[in-house]
Image 1 (cartoon, rainbow, N blue to C red):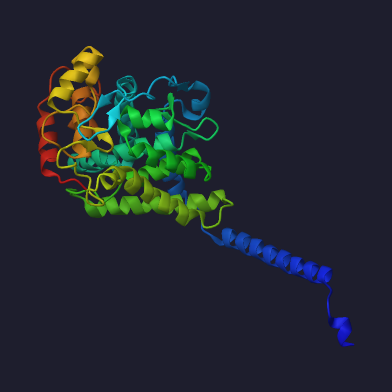
Image 2: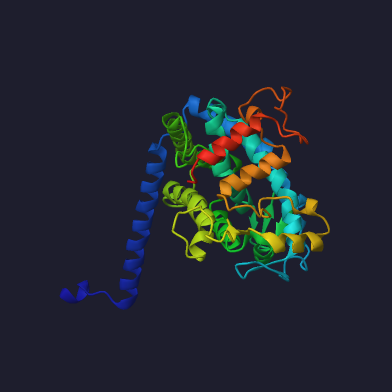
Length: 374
């Protein structure tokens, strides 16, 4: 009788397989029940979601057709670093010149995205400026990361220029390029749609981590509203990735920490510090060129006008956010009245370039000077 209870090897294998199949079936059933029980967006949250999605789509260059419309940066550009920087790194001037051409319109689109969000437009002008200068690089990096193409191993910048890792690194971004590429690779598995990217941008924008904010409570409530709508929308999509929502939240922190702080860590600067190296050698992986280097670059590029951007300032080092805002000033993109949502036709409120520095920009400069880097 006891011999009948002893299973041979084939029966033991079959039994183990049946047990595993039953466990997997129960796990899937439990996951389905869990997904069905998770709350989906309320009507008010759907309104918030639709506004954010439309804001993203209307300010996202090339939209869903970016793969068809992108242009690859020629292989011979950005592969041969030729100018030595004070920190020992080298920059390919041709790649650098290409990148500076697209940074201004990229910043313009981030500003336009923010202005289309009612919660942002209701904030005081000072808070709007602080939030913008704090999130600009984060949102631009996110927009590049979600356009990572594994087949060509490229990122598409500003919806138009496909670049390889070494091109981005040698063109001025340095070690930050590695962080953006790694983020792009990891996000490709999430299959984010436009709405999820839009809500992620809104969460990055309405961050109370920025120093100097006046309406911290209001901004925190706004971010919580976007986070809750975001979570409920993720429930609505029913992703097949286990623990999708917490994993996506970790990516949001990665956008803020890995991209912005990697340059500091690589140079041995304090973790989490957005300040520059004592010698002002590198900001966000983009090189601060000083004195003789500026003149050398001017000679090689032909004219100082080709050197627009946040990387060629030979004054005292400033925070990355201050440098970005200075670029906005020089380009005539961001004046205080325009950011505050006033009529674009009002005096000094136009987003078009202007040769004159309007008086309201002095107010912005005071805010920049008084606000500490996050």
